[in-house]
Length: 316
Ligand SMILES: [Zn+2]
Image 1 (spheres, rainbow, N blue to C red):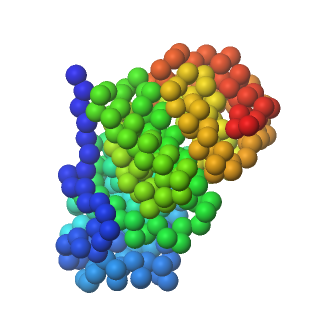
Image 2: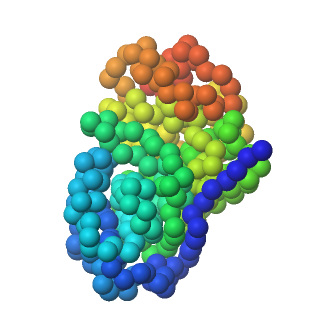
């Protein structure tokens, strides 16, 4: 048996965010600055609302609790997470704490966070990946309006993340016919968007990827990537080499195609400050990713994969 979960309402397409009927007295939570979000809010036609714009990447539990206290007694009718993954993660956790409905609107497309039961929150300065059915959005609004103006680097990292999630999600042991359908379609749309410069397809591909991997899991590629993220490499960037090498190890049907897309996006080789052995010791306890990998992975395999990533250029 298997089950799938997705937001109660999904609204997609041009004008999705401007035509949506937002409840009055919503609290908008965003990572951006007034010069940007004021334009967005007027496009959305939002009238009576509160705004909290002090969200930083990898939001801390203390920030979430502070927002909860600040708006207690203000009869907030809904949270609107507007921006990157962090603003949506804050909304998800707040919604779980208070039971107030959440509307998630991604503006940097890639994580598919608006579709999933996952949230990343920092406790004692350590990022933690949490999963809870209560994190699901009451409405997810995906509108390509927010795409133009995204810097190339953010666009390429997000696209690579979405592509890695779709293909790792397809191969995951937790996959089922439903998730495979979504992951496969997501991969094809994202690949077409990047290879044929059809950027406006990225939000749709990322959204399908979110539904697919969000109901299965990511695997070895993501497990390998975190040692690079810990040394400051952006998530999507580190996946370019990590997921390529993982796909080769897993003999994934997506190996060649994933690599081609990364070549087109001109990702460069990764470096690692710590030794491969130390890094492998950090990766091995990540059972959430490794146990769902289609093939069993030993520490030796991890060292071998890391060696390919940093000492041979896997994207060549
Ligand atoms: Zn990812």
